[in-house]
Amino acid sequence: MRWLDVRRHSLTKKGVARGRGSHLSAEGVALARALGSEARPYERAVTSSSPRAVETAVAMGFAVDDTVEMPSGYVPGEFPRHAQWDWAEPYRRLAEVVREGRDAAAVAEVLRVMWADADAVGGVAEGGSALLVGHGGAIELALVACFPDAAHASWGAPFAHGDGVRLGFAGGRFVSAEFRRRGRSCGASLG
Image (tube, rainbow, N blue to C red; front, side, top):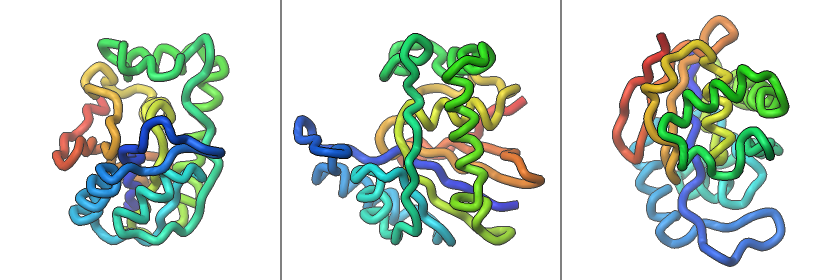
């Protein structure tokens, strides 16, 4: 089995976004350092091309091997920006959106393939691990695509800054998920 640790980027400065995105705040750097002190070594670290994602991996203590353009999980008319915070069961709701098979389903599949690709978990040896730092909305949507038949209602809250999930990958697919909510682990019900 190979492993992919997916993390949402850390806390950002407010109101100072320039160009391609915001940067980490001092609190965000401290949070990322704390997350990195608890992390295991990675064979690869891949982030979105956004500065806040790159800075999160670096503050965690990992050199970034590659940056990729990750599509936003937010799809107008299907998955509005930050809607997951307003939904009582966000993953169950996202599973319904994906099952509709429209644009959000296509984005979810692009993200799922990206996670499994040679640039992420597909690029590590058997028994190895990769780190992927991305964004809220996209992570939740991709997780539903990785586990379409899971008990989504049991997955809890969306990803806060620094939250993550450790995914097991075997036989060309993701087979296990362990949520990591700011320093605490909890298994996901996939059945």
